[in-house]
Image 1 (cartoon, rainbow, N blue to C red):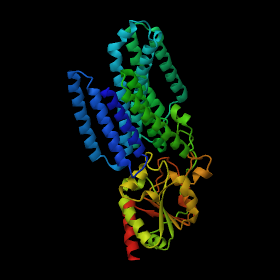
Image 2: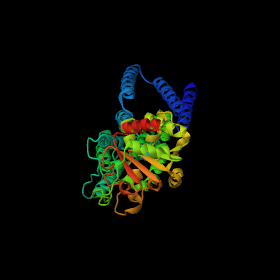
Image 3: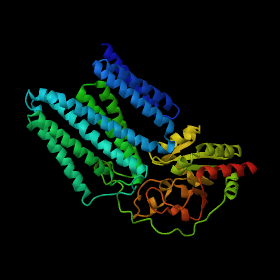
Amino acid sequence: MLITLLNLLAAALFIFGLKKLASVKTARLGNQLAAAGMALAVVVTMVHVTELSWVYAILGILLGSAVGAYAAQKVQMTQMPQMVALFNGLGGLASAFVGIAELLPKAQLYLSMGHFSHHQQTAIWFVAVVLSVLVGGLTFTGSLVAFAKLQELISGKPMALPQQQLINAGLGIACVVLTILGLAIFSSAGWVITCVMFLLVISLVLGVSLTMPIGGADMPVVISLLNSYSGIAGAAAGFAVGEPILVIAGAMVGASGIILTQIMCKAMNRSIANVIFGGFGAEDSSGGGGEYKNTKSTSAEEAAMLFDAAQLAIIVPGYGLAVAQAQHAVREFANLLEKKGCKVLYAIHPVAGRMPGHMNVLLAEANIPYEQLVEMDQINSEFKNADIALVLGANDVVNPAAKTDPKSPIYGMPVLNVEEARTVIMVKRSMNPGFAGIKNELFELENTLMLFGDAKKVVSDLNEQLKQL
């Protein structure tokens, strides 16, 4: 009875923690509640284990805590997407290991009652094991590929084999066939275990095969999808070992990940089916190329004079802001503008940066009021009223080619209407393209001025010039 109540308390902490994570103001409390729920779940689970397992569990907790503490201190904010990808992958691998560890000692015992399909309970158990191994393995290698692309260890461009979709379909069919063989045909534990091991190998290959054809610009969607996969694998592992709290936690992660993936797909005008079955982001990239012509540059002094006369300024944060760690300088810049009577808003594109919510987290770190962070659907109508828009390192999410060039790989993707502002100040370190690898038409517009340099230094120079004015 006590164990059941403690499990319910842990589940409640998960639910309330997730609810609090929905707001920047309460996100820290939500994280603490969820962490407390997980700690309670671990303690409750360890009540059931043997003395030897206690030793392994404690060693695992100490090792994992040490790695987590080190990562929390050393990993930069710009590397958070990579770390999230690794977390997803390790979660999937852990679920796969749990499924295999559950299968090895119990396969022969359950088979003694006949094929798994002969009894509903054993059939559910075997399917749960298969799902934990299959989805967990896929999540692991898929997340490693996502990490490598984000870390630029491999090219961020889509890389697909000839007939990639047929290969993926063949691997999927092989998984179904192996599951049926293990469930309803094989009566030997050795054959069943061999079958599941083949499933593990196929899942590892499938993770790579599904993720490699996806372009680096689409990694935010991939990360949210892999996060969902890790939750599904965890829930399946919970069914396999009979741990309700693991089922609850995994289901919450899986459901929230799918919801977030749908939001991301809508923000990028993509189909969730393309994400799931691979090839997402691998469209023809022939559009949007060529050299830049008729671009105009400006200086911090000239830009400061434009801002000094502005009544409404919209700041568009992007990955360049994250790389430069310019969020605190931006907060000081906004304060100076507000003292001069200028209204300041921040335009937040759902996939700006390298993962969902990346810009929100960065700006919240600098204590920028959450009310000033305006999502794309609400802010787009404001650009036509803005005297000036300051784009800090964003590229693909402000590219008008998404609306004008049918050959562009980002065509149809909802973007911020930055070009409608009276003046656009584009802060970039160079003319290099964004993660999509295409030319940005915004640079050549009549009302766009290029201000080259590191985002933090540029904004700091703007602050100095504004103070002098």
